[in-house]
Figure 1 (cartoon, rainbow, N blue to C red):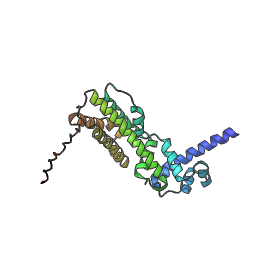
Figure 2 (figure 1 turned 30 degrees about the horizontal axis):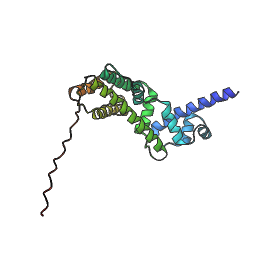
Figure 3 (figure 1 turned 45 degrees about the vertical axis):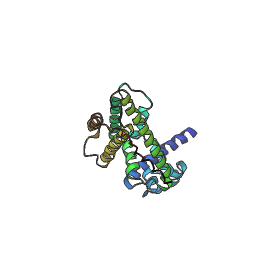
Figure 4 (figure 1 turned 120 degrees about the vertical axis):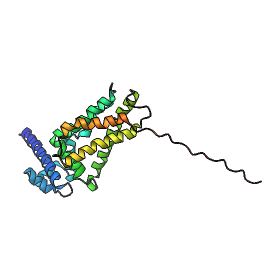
Length: 225
């Protein structure tokens, strides 16, 4: 009986998380009440509080259950040294776009987090976590770009930090634009072409480090005796 109760509780929790994805996506997090989430899940409001402290806790659990596309890029890039760093960057970036295109849960949570949520007030800790994850992603991408420099695929004076920001903005921008209008094109089919375009740009004309020239300081005139 106890085992059955635990199984029922687990099922209810999943129903609530599914409902949160649907209702948050339709109405936005700020405009959704826990009563509405409970109704969508077909359970009582008390069942929500049995599993989650408040809306912020429910929202956090919903985010944790999904693996977002750029998160998968982080986990796959890791600290590995690649024989073909730009090839690895291509493959990981294409995989991230295809993950979004083919994973309905990733699409739902991506849309809720980035388009339907103001991460302020009770949700501020989520904003902090997302920022840390974004920084982690930048770190791993820059490692790959630095490996490309070390391997001679990019010039030695490549500004790896700027190239990383460019790559991240490009991929994240594609994701946001596609989620806003999924019928515009087949993201999974276009992903390799999109990534090849940005990588070709890095190869043809990567951002370069600018050497800062220190201004000459004129010697002070000797003071009159």
